[in-house]
Length: 133
Image (cartoon, rainbow, N blue to C red; front, side, top):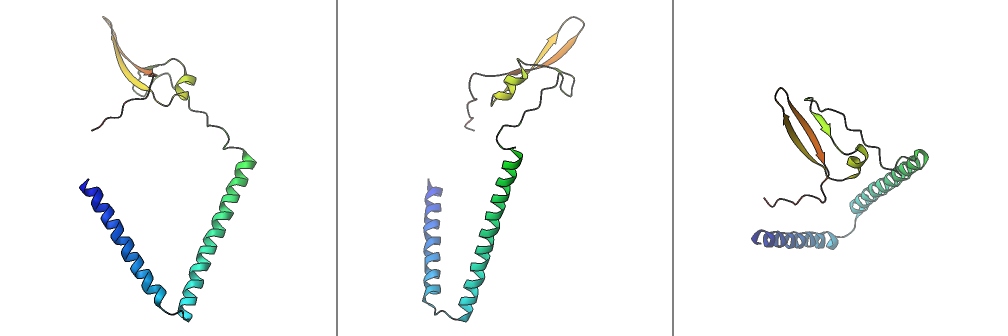
């Protein structure tokens, strides 16, 4: 809470300093140098506005022509094994691609002569709880 108050105090102080310096600028008479500076700043703002508008219109034209931004990209299919050779077990690729959260478990299966590991993809009922660490 102390830090929050310090941020508010510093913000108010900076706005007061900003207002003070603007009062100094406004009280000065307008001369040729002021007009030149205003013209330079105005032309820069106009140039940036023109270029940004052109770029947005250009991108919208590309999006309409190629029709690429109207659908979600198809996700990659899951392989049968991971890079360590463990079998990947899941319900279906389509279902795994639709959910926002997947739990992954490594399950060891040991028999008398073999020992195998499987990676199991589990779709939980809800999203995980956030840890408050």
